[in-house]
Length: 276
Image (cartoon, rainbow, N blue to C red; front, side):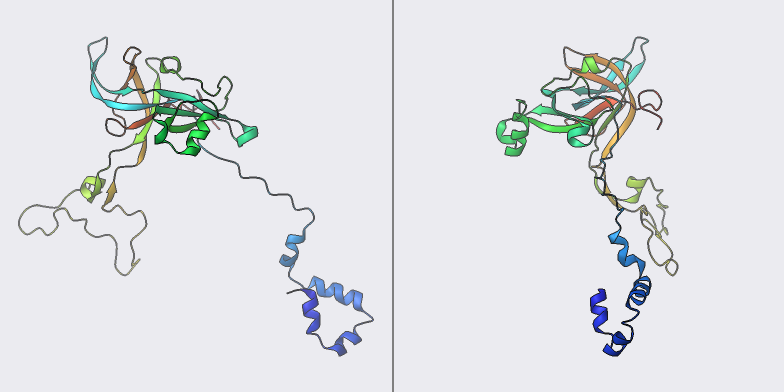
């Protein structure tokens, strides 16, 4: 409510009697108003800063790959090591270099897996044609501390970025299992299977009835399992085959054969990423 609207509700007799002391009464009247009404009129209000984009920094530039399957690998000592074979289709081309001045953060955008023109939309084709790049299915960003040395249409070679013995982080989409029960999804223990047992694979109690009278958020229950993005950290590269264009990584990686993978240098605090 404004001051002018308040003055119309005051009787005329009171207005005439207070005409001689209009200045002090008006000032005292203003002091009695809530302060929060004048908070937006502050002259020292600083302009709002644009929101800063926050994302996880990578320890170095990475590549995208395709999972081919698993096999056994014999090292120089004769030990059998289970490895995942990762292949590379045409791609891993730098499509855009983002800087602090133009985009608010430093990052390198990489494209992977060549496809036909009709497989992409016109905006996607326009984005790639701006730098004269072939049609690519997947585009991902790698936030880096330094982006010097990268330019659009630059091809990234795995043998130049990684070497045998390096530790890498591999992320991908896990295999979807659909709707599963508590035993398979959360490793619950089943009940007795003998006669008389009324709880074999059922979930059981999920909380008290009176207090709290509800189910706590995050309760482990049956539901959708798998089909989520997962990262396996610090996997060792056992072999890089440039002729077959494959890399063998120790252990298992997310997804089934044919899935898209993202391979980046393993983050080691104090070594390749700052402690802060």
